Image (cartoon, rainbow, N blue to C red; front, side, top):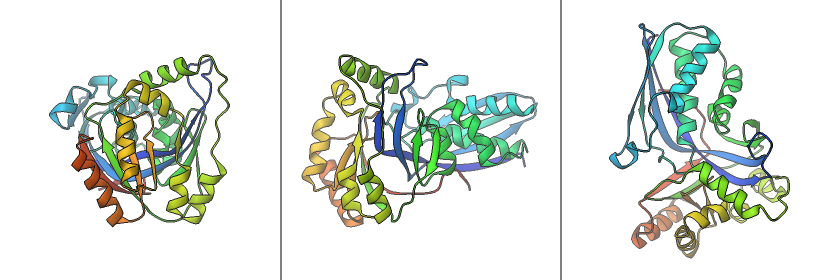
Length: 302
């Protein structure tokens, strides 16, 4: 096969516990991931001349924020797979972006996971998803989860993933900001804000896991949490009003997604999701408002 096309979902963090910075510069995390039905699409085409290249289709406003060359995580994923498997062929990657760039929804990590699966297919390297996981972990904390999707606990710096016993499907509203927010900047602000106080080791709350086992959206909304909230709001204080608007629309819970700036709102059903979306759009608080559902599977062929 010389061409393969895959779709890969966005991820959200139902909780994000952040510990004190480690000697390697990373923070220990305790998180629960959920994959949403908001997908990027990646097409891989073999280049017999051995060239690695990437082209991205996205909005004009976001294009400047998408890295090029080997700074693009998807192309880095292709280069890593080629190096480890001894493949001589190159690949042309074409990425159609739907996941907002810099939105705390792991769009770059999603494309890296997609590139690993698509290149593995077109190069015929024959690795299983399990065998791709160590490469995914080298690329980024969220990449291993996106190979599989669903709902999972993330540990380490997020790259160690284990499944969660969970029931049900959940309705979300995403308040997408006009401008992205750097993950590195948010973690640096977290370090600045916590430098004079003890940061405990992170853990996933029993209440959140119980809510997922029960498939209870109301309990899940009460258990949503994010230790990066203070840092994200310090850098982008206007996000506070977006969170408040969603709660005024009776969202079951509201939380910043990952390092932000996307705000997440949990709804009780599709009709309630639409009501929250209309309230946010009507207030003009967000650049875009998106309704989504989860969990969904990870990278899959189309």
